[in-house]
Length: 166
Image (cartoon, rainbow, N blue to C red):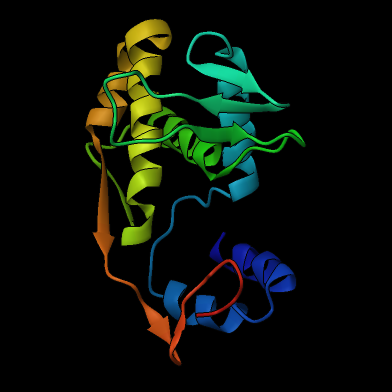
């Protein structure tokens, strides 16, 4: 599986393929979840819960936190072109991880600029569990953690795996 991933990923991201080969070769990876797959799952969850947890706004679908949550902002989960955002993709990833592997703990490690993002995602998960999809979402949220690190730079610039800057 690892070789197929490297082969396919390298075609789309030639600047990253050597890095992936070096880093992945000594790691046992059971499954790769591609952003597109998690996005499809997240988009379905969001669409099924419009009017319950999510709200349509100007052609997009947004999450509006409850009044008492002053620490997070309204966030777009499906943009006006119909594409899932990173929030929806992470919602889908949480579901996929727990449905398939049911880990004791799921850890998201990012730089500290993503703190707000995960506050929103986890808050949406709690509302999904509390109101509509049952206790499993509350369990999943309780077993999910976001751990941050400081800004990582490479050659004096912000690192971006998405743009190949690693």
